[in-house]
Amino acid sequence: MTLASPAQAATSLAVTIRNLNKQYRAAPHPAVNNISFAILEGSVLALLGPNGAGKTTTVKMIAGLVLPTSGDVDILGCNVFSQRAQAIAHVGAVLEGARNLYWRLSAWENLLYFGSIRLVPRRQLIQRADELLALFELTAHKHQPVREFSRGMQQKLAIACSLLHDPAILLLDEPTLGLDVKAAKTIEEIIGYLASERRKSILLTTHQMHLAEEVAHDIFVMNEGVQVVYESKESLLKRFDMQGKIVDVELSSSPAEETLAQLRSAFPSVDQQMNGGIETLSYSSHNQQEMLTFINTVDTLGCRIDNIRYRRPTLEEVFLTLTEKKTT
Image (cartoon, rainbow, N blue to C red):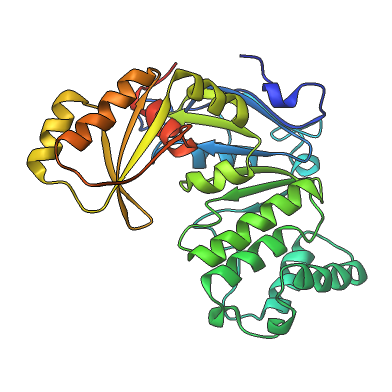
């Protein structure tokens, strides 16, 4: 496909990645193998893939922390590798496993420290730090040591620190990792706000497919270093929706193993899961009659059906389907 996804037509590009490669000396295969994509102004691109897919290496190359074997990254027209200082001035990053905060310092001290590293003028820094504390609802904890913060508060502060120099580009590596449901929802809302209201261009890596489905405009899936798919989220979900709907059959109790074995014999792709504490059997097909046959079989085998609903595949289901194959 073209460098810009369908969602990016006629829109200014903030980040452009062209034919990016990274081969580590001791590795038999490239960590990143000839990938290309773009991030438009005010949008979120979700970079998805299983562990070891090459996501972190890709993010570090975009951030200028790792040199590629070949390829280019341009940020607002500046090449990250030949014009590093100019390019990175436009970037804020919160990287998983990196030292994003100093735990012995207070929230305020962290903000002043990281702002000074970015050479934000003192008066401007104080004003922005206060604004960001208010935006992230941390003003009441301004002088509290970060070590006393919850994981969610730490993530909010880390993102605030990354915004002190008002970057156009934000790199968020697993921003909801280890957060409870409420804290993760808050981060989700912050990401949406930064893209839609502050016009930040955001690269998001996550294993939380619900987060990607909620906030991303474009999806880039990679596996074993190579591109699997790159297109707008809506286009991707619509494409899989056309390939087949999903029927969820909700049961009053778990089916016996023998019953499941019989079902899987007739419908090999049936999926058993708990959805909100409800035992559910899911089956995908483009054939309506086949779906009805599946429902009738569940009933004939003696399962007590509480509810039946039809839906399109979720991004998580699409992702699992895509990464079961290696590449397209």
